[in-house]
Image: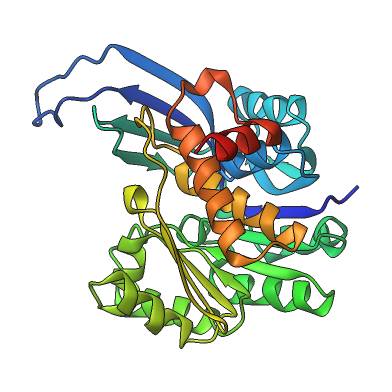
Length: 313
């Protein structure tokens, strides 16, 4: 059964090692005091939305292995609809190893595993799950070579034909943003309703440095709304009603992994509730602040926790 929101994209496992004082040189070793294993990729937004009380469905795949089974079990336990997440045969589940610095910043090394098997045919097999969703987030574009530009555009066209709203978060281009990648994303922006880049992604796409210039260039490409994630500087958004700025909440970051996905979840809830942009951005910042400032085994915040945080801020 479809929910209010559907998220299409890369579902993988994350192995997080922290804190890493510095990257080791080849042939050397660095010891860390902590490690964590958790669902990654679109699981961050799925779990966050479910915790906020939003009916949400995942659309994607995992490998035919114990890691894939564990991911599905964790999502289902949290209340995520996993009926349209396939187990791709003869494949291993994608794995990202994250190295987190003492200040919370991180870097990843990823094995794509099952992800190339996610294509438009898989997505269209489960059209019922996004057909009834008000918001469809497509996430992890550069980790989904089987979907690619044509598949992503085909999905966007299908969702719009059913009256749904499409959000896009491409993530970082693992090939280093060659001109082909830039042009693909700029063409997709003509089709999407909400684009959700980070500042470094926006800079790579536009060739601009300032957040304001990036925002204007991306909005001019055609989306109804661009929401620019600025990390500890907060966020900015551009719509036909103008430019909106929202500072971040001052918190001590323990782990920034999944911060952008949690922010996306906050934006989706605001869209579903019909909030104005100011309220939506403030709420999304609060969700991200709570996620990064507490141990991940505490879980994602409930709606009541976010509301209490906002009242106290």
